[in-house]
Image (cartoon, rainbow, N blue to C red; front, side, top):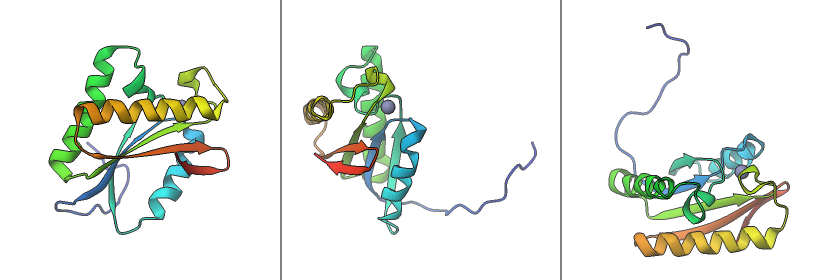
Length: 136
Ligand SMILES: [Zn+2]
């Protein structure tokens, strides 16, 4: 193999403040980066999948929900994550580009219910608009 980039990564174990379930829509990657920079001394495990919270609430296949729940459980087990931050965003392609904020608020509430059914963990619900991140 050949090295394609030199970069230092920290060794050792870390404790995650939270595991974040985020949509992979790159238009909102900058919002996630800014959110992470607001917590410079903390670690987050990030699950980036199409639709974010949609994979918990209305996945295309039931096994998709199981996969996400197992990823969250792995973050809890490996890094002691104390919270799940679930995310939905404006004009999400996984939802057909819907624009109604109230729809996404309801999806986030349903996502919280799914998590509470399977895991004993805190949940933070975040809606990301084109102008910022809102806690629901
Ligand atoms: Zn999306």
